[in-house]
Image (cartoon, rainbow, N blue to C red; front, side):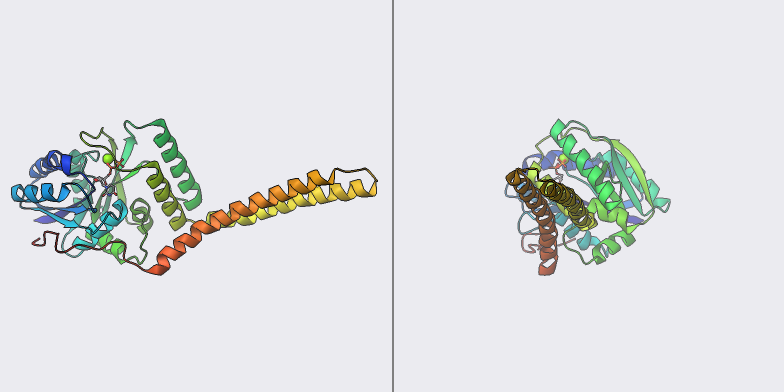
Length: 312
Ligand code: UDP
Ligand code: MG
């Protein structure tokens, strides 16, 4: 009998969890010969998520949950879940609680895993209903990530089945700030892809603001690529070329005795160099912030053991 753990990060889903989780459990009940455990990681919810989870636990004996002390973000919640089960399960499935990761895909994922594939990834065939701004931002991000990190993860999702060896490798990585969707392919285990169409969220609303998505994109790019740093060199060379042209022109005009409007040239040069320096400093700042976060070596989550259910 195989054992699989579902890891579900939740944040302020109290009002809708008792409608979403039963759908997931109903799907699990159709799968035989496998014992399931569902581990919900409450990412510091401030609503009634914990009390909803407690009452759901009475109904579903294989449901367990851990509470992070505050909202650390979905990436940290996934990491907490994986670290919790890494030694006791044969495989994990990471999925959202809001049914936007269709539970109907689980049997197919398990089937592929049983055929010996350690990573089964569900990818978004269509991104479902979303605003044109989110679509544009997502497209820009994936394009940048592909060209800077050399990794095409367009339309990948966090809905993945991972064999225990993949979980162990993921947990053994020393870095703290993580981009789950990028690290799993980076680990390099054999993977299979299952396409799915993102359904509408049946209840509740997304907790991600554009600002949080942009922050996640910056973490993703700066943890996977140092190409923006090399860009500074490129910008420096370009500005040198421009200065040379300007300089030659100024010298030529001086020697031929043509009266030049010196101020214009000076102002142009100052603004050009000034803006280049600003861009360069901005990019370096992103990396320095990243180094800073890593150097601090703070754990990226803490579990509140008193609040968590700890009998499973
Ligand atoms: N989530 C989380 N921590 C957060 C934000 C979200 O654990 O800080 C959970 C959320 O409860 C849900 C999943 O991550 O189970 C996906 O979130 P959501 O549906 O809001 O995002 P989207 O579908 O827009 O990507
Ligand atoms: Mg969602």
